[in-house]
Amino acid sequence: MSTASSIATPLTLRGQTFKNRLIKGAMSEALAPTEGTVTDALITLYDTWGKGGLGCAITGNVMIDMRAKNEPGVVVIETEKDLPRLTEWANVGKKNGMIQLVQLSHPGRQCPKGLNKETVAPSAVGFSAAMAPYFGVPRALTETEILDLIQRFGEAARICEKAGFEGVQLHGAHGYLISQFLSPKTNHRTDQWGGSLENRMRFLIEACKAVRAKTGEQFILSVKLNSADFQKGGFTEEESLEVCRAIDALGVDIIEVSGGTYEAPAMAKGPRKESTIKREAYFLEFAEKARQVVKNASLMVTGGFRTRQGMDAALASGACDFIGIARPLAVETDAPASLLKGQDVRYAVKPIKTGLKPIDNMAIMEVIWYAAQFRAIGEGRKPNPKLSPLVVFMRYLRGNLKAVLKRNTRLRA
Image (cartoon, rainbow, N blue to C red; front, side):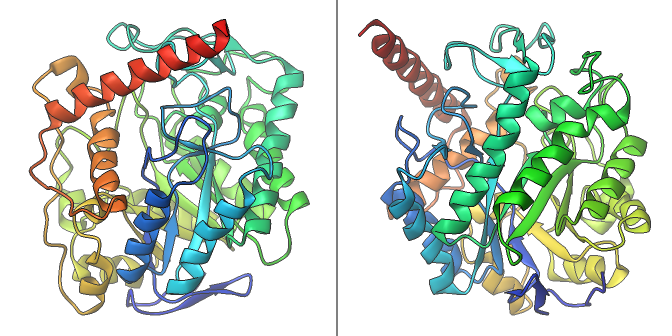
């Protein structure tokens, strides 16, 4: 892909024009009711971001299976029952000249205990001792179930296109189901879905094919992919480059580079390398390597960007075609408009700490603290950069408990 030296430069993919190179990276909104339907707050949130100048927004996790939620409050797309509301959501982007991609996901083993009837994954591999109290050991999927999930990705994409969204992103990073299939640490299968990298990437490849088979020529397909898991025995950088090569050849339009899992959250903790600090972005060095093997797809880098200069430099280097912004948008909804005027992001993003070490060692606070800000925006209030992480965590625990009790009540009825 050719690149430009400015975030203000438009780019057209499959006949769809991104008015600038700024994309809102996916962040969990947690604004849906138990049924997983679209709410007024969700529409207001994206309308607010659209007015802030974004060229594109990627939604937070949208589940493809009601039986497998990663948290309470996620949107679920299985059928067309919520099509009118999904259409309202898609129209928000059209009104603001903002392309919207729906991030389709399945959490696999990354589901809090008790939230779902059961947890499934490529293999029955549990979490580390520190996280085991919060996440149960999953059941290994059968091949029939694997094939069903692949088709669910395709069906959800079809519904998204019918609603008016310009495309979807398959979540293949951060330890979710596709990422679990890719990693030898969580995929111990000995059939065609495990073992060699070719087999471990089969689930992602087939999901991409299912989306393409059920959507039109102008529908954009993106994949979010880990550069590495950053865990011993996990998905490596070399393997990620091979997957990049394969999905590029398959016709994926945008590859978003990320990294880490719940157990090793790359962007949530720990010191950054000097080269990362200097260039701002967490995964820009990997994107440069990916550029050597990706010949057709656009590359997107999210995480760490804070200045207009840093963003333009990344584009000018040829390492990426899109700049992803995520957490700053939780407290500064008009950040894109400011950046386009030459101003930098106003709020420095810092690790969210409760003071409870087991919790702070996980990535969960980097999800739920920002979700609390999204709720405020969706309800027409201003975000609060000084919001207490501990207060947010206690609210989250109460919310999870209510969801578990509600599910148990339904099962007994």
